[in-house]
Amino acid sequence: MRISDVVKNKGSQVVTMRPDATVRDLLALLAQHNIGAVVISEDGSGVDGIVSERDIVRHLAADGPDVLDGGVSKIMTSDVHTCSAEDDIESLATEMTQRRVRHVPVVADGQLQAIVTIGDVVKHRLAQLQDEKDQLTAYIQQ
Image (cartoon, rainbow, N blue to C red):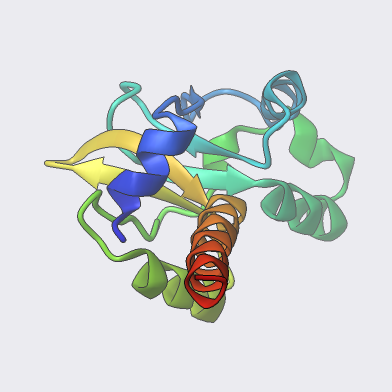
């Protein structure tokens, strides 16, 4: 199975934010969309960085509440691990686990196409396992 299968089921909408927005604005956006990370993009189509809830917590703990009025570019992860729609889901799941990341932007020709979360990968795998179970059950009952 490919990442494109996951994107087909979940959709390709990605919430982005400019790097000059404040962390306070970022928190509002996360809450508004009920998401755990935002792709940081100067033009809305490239990937300049990513900021997750975990990044915010770490910087709040280290720098205090003043971080809220600073720019997201100061707390974003700039070296973003991305994938393509043609990548294998199992390989991505392994990389997400090893890198301890929960959000991976899907990119084609330098352009942001979607975002895949570890929850999306797990949901897809559970559906796949249920299908296999159903097929085996039907086979045994024949």
